[in-house]
Amino acid sequence: MREFGKLSREEKGELLLAHHEGREIEFLGMDRTWKSAANDGGPGWCRGVAYRVKPITLEVPNCNFRVEVTFTSSGNPVSKIVHNK
Image 1 (cartoon, one colour):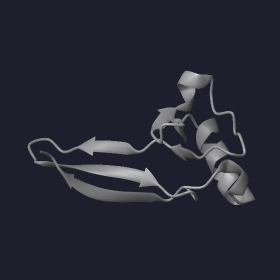
Image 2 (cartoon, one colour; image 1 turned 90 degrees about the horizontal axis):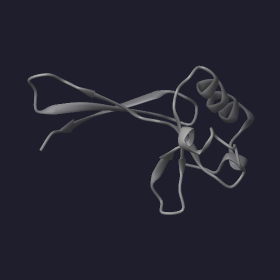
Image 3 (spheres, one colour; image 1 turned 180 degrees about the vertical axis):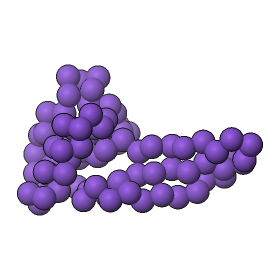
């Protein structure tokens, strides 16, 4: 996770494209938790703020696990299986 101003042109472009395509963008707040940029009028694309595409959680019916999909700064999906408690 890097601040917007430290991302490459390609990484910035991928975030902007994800926003344009309607994917939810989050920013890292002062309390170090991810917050929806939509609640803040949309991403401000501030140089000193870290942004990401909101992760997707897929619940698997009748199973005791879920799949969480996050995205790298280049937009590639990364999934992991998490056991439900």
